[in-house]
Length: 378
View 1 (cartoon, rainbow, N blue to C red):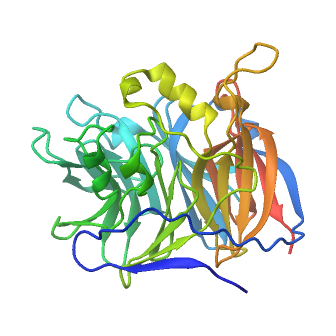
View 2 (tube, rainbow, N blue to C red):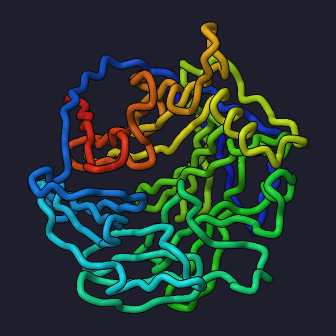
C-alpha cells in the first residue's frame, strides 16, 4: 500500500521548516459497513448534566468516564459498560475555586488512584477519596513568555513512562494576529518529579506564518501510546510526533468534501468577534483525530465550508455546516468518509470506547448525556 508522509527528525529546541507543503492524501476506499445505535448515560436516574471536561479510562475490559458535572458542581464516574454511576463527590471536597486558582480547564482519568485536574495555576493529583498532591504551574505575575493550559481542544495527558503531564502551550506575550505567536511550541511536558518543563518541537502549521486566520487557529491533540497526533483547524495535514525518537511524520488528511481553501482574514478585522465567527463558519475546519485502539482506525472530524448567506436571504451559522467523519487506517490512508449533514454531533465531546465511537448528540441544554454509538463491522 502506498504511503506518503514527510518525516522530520528534530534535534535542538527549534526546527526551521521551509515553505508549507500540503501532503497528498492517499485514498484507499473500502466498503466499510457500520451500525449506529442510541445510548443515554444512566437514563434511569434522571440526573441532569452540564459538562465540558471529561476523560475515558479502559480497565479490566470495561470503560469508565470521569465527568466534572457543573450541575451542583460534582465529580462523577460512570461505568459505560454497565451504564451505571459508581462515584460522585462535590468538587469542593478536592479542588478549591478561587480568584488565584480559577476554574478547571482539563481532567485526565489515568486510573482510580490517579486522576489529574488542571487549573490555571495548579495541577492536582487525586484519587476517589482524597487529594494526593499538587504542583504549581504558570507565573501569576505574568512575567513568563509561555503559558501552560488546555485551551479547549488539547486536554492534559499523563505519561507514566517519564512521569510527565503533557499540556498545551501558548505565548501569552504575543498577539494572536502576529507571526511571533505562531513561532512558539504548541505543547510541553511538565515532569512531576523535578518540575522541569520540556517544550515539544511541535509548532503551528506554516500556513499561520503567512497569513492571519482569526479564530481558525485551534490546536487539536490526541494520544496514541507514545505518539501525539496534532490537527490544526485550517490545515488538512496530520502531524504525528513520536516521543521515543523525537521524529515528526506529516500525513495527508484532506476531506473530499473540501471544495475551497481556507481564506485569510484581513488583520484590520482582528478585533471584530463577529467577523471572526463569520470567517470560521464560511471556511473549512479540521477537528481532532482520535485513534480507535479496539479496531485499528483513526477518526477525524471535518466541518465543511458554507456560504454566509443563502439564496433565500437567510444566514448560516456554525451549526449549519456539514459535519463529516473521516476514517483512516493505521498508516493514514483514507478509507471512508461519512457525511452526517448539519452539526448534530459535537466532536469535542465524542470519544472512542470498546463498543465504538460515541458521538455526542447536540441538544438544547445538556439535560441528559445522549450519544449515538457508531461501530464499524469487522
